[in-house]
Length: 304
Image (tube, rainbow, N blue to C red; front, side, top):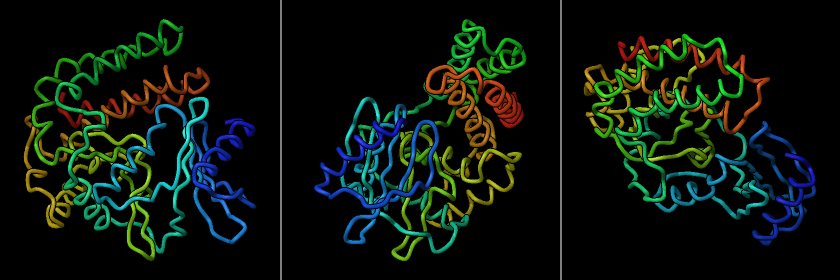
């Protein structure tokens, strides 16, 4: 985001909040599609300025919904949109007192998944879930028409196999827990502070199978570990989550189903980024690599 637009968006957000200009701005995290800054005001108070463009430009709505429904999240003090960019002024939670662990994650997931669903959120039901492989094939076709992703017959073949298996393997999508899905549910998205915990990063929240959240907790960089996820699912149930989280679905153990479909969900997302949101051929080698890895995992976990 260029600095003049950033400065104007910040000015609009501060005006909406009735807040004077900041005397200091410090970057916390910045990448091509979003950024986070800590602001310091003349009276010494601080706040967080977060900005993002599509498809992350409705996070203020998701955060306000979550707050209204009782989910512990940062308070949105004001928000504004300028030239397709969302800007938000959020309460500053300060430095965490410790990192979130698996018990923290299980307890937070229980609270989120027990929250009443919100009609404003997009829905990922069984029909949408089983369409993910075919949607990924559509992205691949567009990439190839743009003379990109040319040597990817293996990706096309893997997606074709998943299309054929999707009907059977998507069974159980709406089995509990089905409702709020954070979609970026990682230890770094759970802030443990002096005043308790808060969930961050709701930019891609939707209504869908909560097992996708639980499958994402341990990340996607390392090899997926079904046994480790099974232990986490059991912790989730112990903390008050529905026992149905442990039930078989799609002919698979819950942990396999969750990890397999989470990897397929990630594949479709990465391919959509590659052609639509990022759309930069220079990033293709990295995207192709991660898509191949996730597809290999999805085929194995979903037993295709």
